[in-house]
Image (cartoon, rainbow, N blue to C red; front, side, top):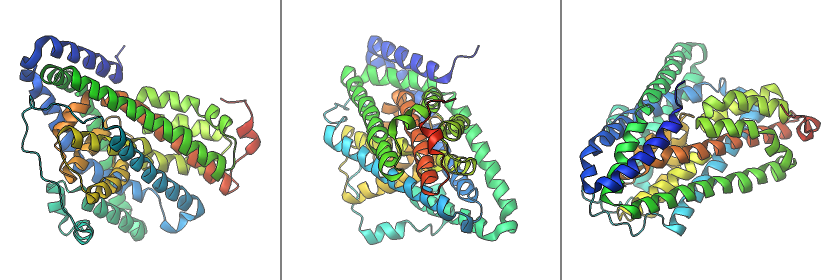
Length: 407
């Protein structure tokens, strides 16, 4: 029987730490394996975002048919995404997990100067003046704008846009498969990178990573227990305990697979059968959520960017914080429910705010452990929005939700 990827990653993580601590600075000789892994991740950034975002927007169908269900769902997803990313930035600024780490043993390029960007430059920079140049430069924000416009254009073209939509649907599936192939390299990359980190920087680096993992779990739990429970209680006006009882199966699958897409069938079953939401609202909101609701990922992207800035001494301006907030919310859509895709978005955001990409090498070893909890958060958010929209539109059976007869 094949060993699950997450088990192989954790085994590689432990072995890498042991080998690095025993080998010492000599462990840097195998860092090339980790560098190759990171290079493959960077390769995926542009095509994954482009195809996933265009396909996601086009999958909405007719813009006029979004109506109350789509409008409410998207609004809640956007608001919770912003709350999540600012929570991540807040946790990073408050607890400073990367501060004081000695990186002198790490060979890297010069630390970039703080970026000074006016709001006019920021707005102009969002316009993809040359889409090809934007892709070549991995300039993510204008790439996202261009992708959204293409998706909207497909919707406006209606039947004439269907052939193009099929191309992007196929492209999105292909990129998910390519990402899955690259993720199979994760154990090798994790082993080499953890051996390098443990061998060159030693125990202080491992403690900093442990702090990052703890903050990731704390942030996710805050989103679930405070934000989502508050939405269910006060916006949907529904009891919280039956809600969490009804989605425990989906949370368990999400934690083990680290994939919102893989968990989607279980999420839909829990929302419809256990929480009493109608089939139409369930299928629309959970499918949409698996694509665009990545609150756990958004929170972590904010946290990890500050971690990298602290480790390598990069001063971030307010414009950088705003860029992180926008990219982490919109960019988490590009993560598309795929295990490990958070690393890909991390590369895009780090590039945008001049945080050294060496940070990815630091966190790649423990990313899978954090990704599992982030996925639980994302799936819980999908269910919370589904019951809220169902309650608001009269598409929820309250008696079914409150019953303990769960499947």
